[in-house]
Image 1 (cartoon, rainbow, N blue to C red):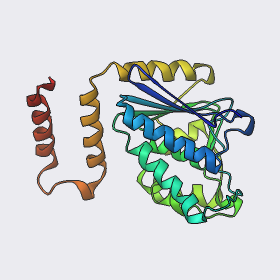
Image 2 (image 1 turned 135 degrees about the vertical axis):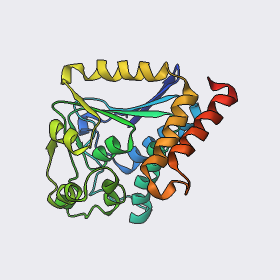
Image 3 (image 1 turned 90 degrees about the vertical axis):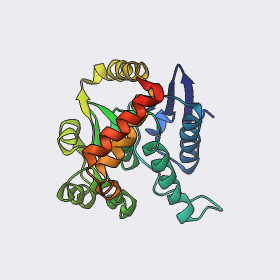
Image 4 (image 1 turned 180 degrees about the vertical axis):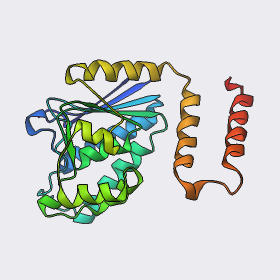
Length: 239
């Protein structure tokens, strides 16, 4: 049986690929464990860029919501989502997700937790959990940080699917390209990022996380804080 998730790293680029194309990369318990293991390897590799993608026509249909795993509690199963989100969002380099075909539930979450999500113009995204009888509480722990509350509520309450153009307007993805150009665009973006100064990228990502979260901002003027961080980085011999 093929590995449900493939991992590779070379030249500063780590790649984690869902590898169940015959099942539209639906994520089982074993697949999620393999995905987490791949993300952990990416962290340990020291890679500058992480690429997440899916083999075949779809990124992923999301988690197998009807699966029951002997000896694994529902809580422990669901906590795997938290671990995967933590590893993807906390990757110290820059993460890029290629969104092809369907990216439902956890698949849309992958786009949101990545630094850059490049979607094919034929991609379809959405949170389908409630339609399957599961209220997506975990989704709401992060969705309000990415889209307006009204848009978030609409997405989770209706379980509606959105095309790539609407996903871009809502802020679910970074950009949209023609399907035929997706792979080329992703690889060009990855090559550009991998060629940049790794420490500069890491500083920028760390600072961006603080800038996006007002409760993490220091009491003093944030602009002055930016100057201090940049000067400290330069004086460490980074420029």
